[in-house]
Amino acid sequence: MDNKKVKDLVDEALELNKSLFLIDLSISVNNKIQVVVDGDNGVPLSECIRISRNVEHNLDREEEDFSLEVTTPDIAHPLSEKRQYIKNIGRILKVKTAEQEFEGTLAEADQDKIILQWKAREPKPIGKGKITVEKTVTLEYKDIKEAKVKIVF
Image (cartoon, rainbow, N blue to C red):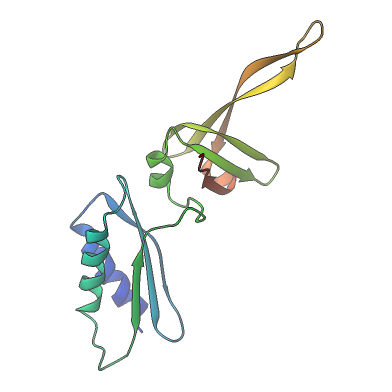
């Protein structure tokens, strides 16, 4: 299976809806094509079907048999694109760097970095007891090893 041809067909389908973007494209040795797309405002099922049809109708099953799956990233899938961070502003993220782990609300995201905020209980500077303080950390994308959206019930 020609990886470039499949990618071109997916890109062609994504051109029709600029709010969608490719997360992952893989083709296994037995020609199982997996396409993972996300969108700035989510991805309706109709868009997955449209992308699937664009790929399927332009590949010849007589030439090479294949299976095709077009999906959106599931909740266990880590964030990988800057657009995904921007889309998730206001949600709680669990972010791992080489040195430590952070969990907080994604306050800002731009092309270079993200800003997480959370509340923590710390001992009072004077006297007994604890106070609640606001914590903030700025992380550059290059320092992030993994980031996942945390679902709160």
